[in-house]
Amino acid sequence: MNSDAPTTVDDWQTLSNDLLQGLVHALNNRLSALGALMELARVRDETVDPLSELPTEVAQLQALTGLFALLPERRADAEALELSAAIEDAVRLHEHHLRLRAERCEVRYEGAPPPVRAPRWALVRTLVMLVHVAKRSAEGAGERGGRPMIVRTDDSIVSVCVSVLFAG
Image 1: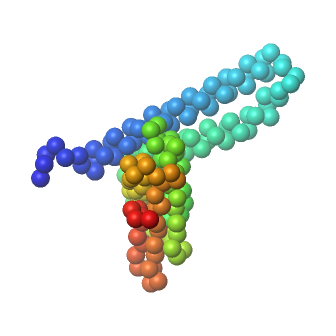
Image 2: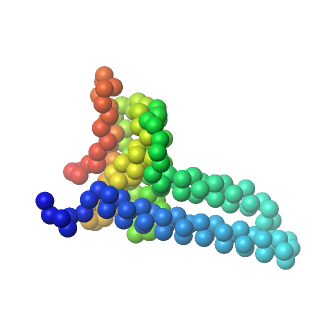
Image 3: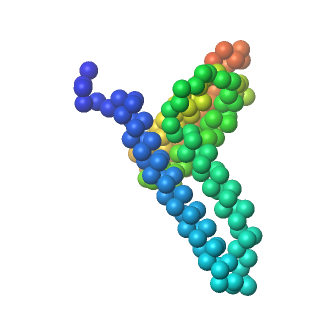
């Protein structure tokens, strides 16, 4: 085994640092928007109602803090989780990747995904890595719209397969 080869831990560390930078950038944007709204309120510009924009900014800040909470590893027991909600979280989190934010990841469900038992941080981390693979492979192939991430369930709901489609 090549000791210089990246490990999954190394891959996650690099990816999570990139995501963290993107989230911090988005947080700074929201804080700048709040600062601009406060300035508009201070100068009392009648053409703009800064208070009307506050609920939107607060909701965006709340969404960002929710995404920040997905990054750290936590000691947690496995719990029943909705796979589709965890996939949506992973896709939304990866949308903040500084270099790959323009790439899209299409999620296709083949069968209704059942709940799964896992620690939330571990499931989201695994799904973020799959989203990352889908976006990087599309970027490398020069494809617009990304590669689809396929979620398959078998009829007996014994297994769930999440994979990235590499062939058209």
